Structure formats: structure tokens, C-alpha cells
Image 1 (cartoon, one colour):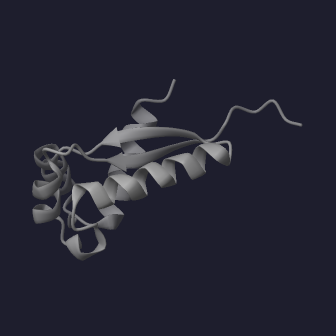
Image 2 (cartoon, helix red, strand yellow; image 1 turned 30 degrees about the vertical axis):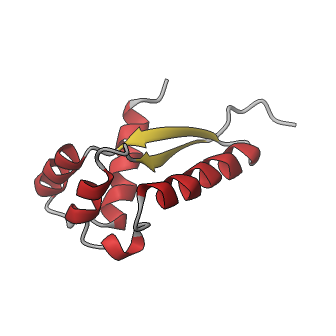
Length: 96
């Protein structure tokens, strides 16, 4: 058995109030659940699976306008790759 700390992963998280706007700005909106409730159920399941696997899962809130600015600064499309990179950056900034 190892004493290494649990691997940290970030999970994209959206507020109910922002979800429709998030879907509007995403280039790959077809990859996002059509409703907040559907997205939330899947996200909570993914979070539980990660924790059961021994990962330290952090919810990384993606706010629409902040994410759009970040994408513009990085000159990337607001899509799944950008969400992954944004969440990884925010997760590392929040690491202990």
C-alpha cells in the first residue's frame, strides 16, 4: 500500500442559472445534456465514480463569461478541449 495522496482531478461544474448560457456559447453544445437536470445527474454520477476510484474530485465552476474570456485570451474555441484545459488550470491553481 502506498502513502501517496489521492490523485486530484477537476470536474467541470455549472450552476443551474448559467447552464442555458453555457450551452449557448459552446461550439460543441450537442455534447452537453439538453437540460440542467440531465447534466447534473450525469455529473454527480461521474463524481461518485471518481471518488469510489480513490480520486480527489474537485468541482470546478465554469461561469459563462469568464470561460468565454479565457477562450478568447487563449484563442481557442469554447469546446470540450477548452473545458478540459480550463478545468485543469483552475484545479491546479486551487491545489493545496
